[in-house]
Image 1 (cartoon, helix red, strand yellow):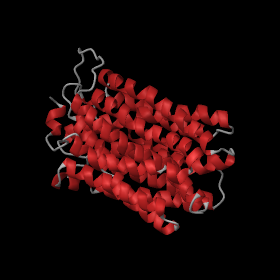
Image 2 (tube, helix red, strand yellow):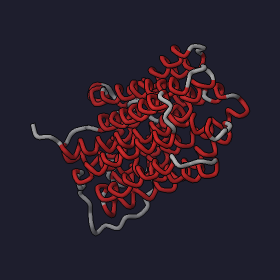
Image 3 (cartoon, helix red, strand yellow):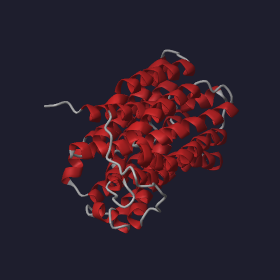
Image 4 (tube, helix red, strand yellow):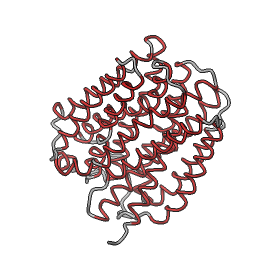
Length: 384
């Protein structure tokens, strides 16, 4: 069988994207401790990351339509690695806010372009691969968190950890950029803003709450395990890594699930697992039980975005690039805005009570397909 080099090259970029986020997420408690930040101060840094991403995401769709995701991704993938390395140099609260915004801008750009390239790869080979690719993102998150846990356990400083990670990621990016596919585009068609239709907005709303849960867990799960359940820094990072393993496993099963169950069934089940799993983590007084809840939560988070991104990528009115850009801007706003909102609420309510929002987000994801009538035929509606 011929090796599908573009698909595995893109899988590598998803892996790099996830690794960078895993490194960041697992180091959040370290930034908090090293810079003596309260929950409110940490939230401001997370909000800066949100702002950077929201600025770049809407622009990416137009750049992709004009130049193609293959060209755009060459720039943003290298920028993402560079911004992660720069983030490691944050030695004060003000600098952390600035560099977090720059990292967020690069991450937002990369998230849109890799998903647009994923649609191009699916069209090139004529088969679904979104869950596999999202699974590679989760494996990257696992690698970043696991490497952080090991290095912290051996006393290595934050700057060393993130710089080494960025160097390895940069080497991987340079090795695969030439292997990506060039999607078919209409060279004489001017790109213009098209407001998302009702079907795409429904998908974006479910994506918002699914990614709200994923983002909040990514930035606060390790902090919660350490501050509320008494885990060490390395154990807290390992707890996040366990969650990442569960999420990756669920995504690698995603294409099989999508082939056997309706989209709405997968989304309902995913939301219920998030609500039940993270609820278990919040009510537990044991680290082991808390991590078990994160395992259930990871399984719930796993296939929300693969299902929704695939549906959005079939949008024939806007085109795959602008459709994914629009959905990403709304959906990933939840991913990036959730963490600072949790932090601000934690100042007055305590972190455990603030994280109840994750449970609520899971309930909304479960109800969304029923309220919005999301079915297998949504793919046709989105393209209408």
